[in-house]
Image (cartoon, rainbow, N blue to C red; front, side):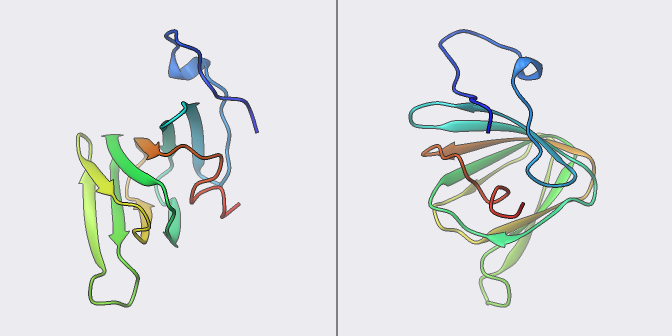
Length: 124
């Protein structure tokens, strides 16, 4: 995995290393001591099945459209949320969630605390 820890100076996202932990997904990350930001490009049709993690996650849709499935599938608390460009969603720690890219999408995901592995890393 590329070292994406950033020093205290400005950089362009395009200058950061890119990784592709899943098909239809391209990611660049900045990893700090207490938070991590992932710049993610998803192709239309990308699907990530429901998962959960200890990290708190904030997803900010820059362009495109995502459908989040929130809660454990098959339970009464499960529901879908459509997030379009300019929208944001908070996923508290250990909240089951999955996502489908309804359009080609750029999303910024903020994770706290940072970690080398997220839901997309465990899927391969």
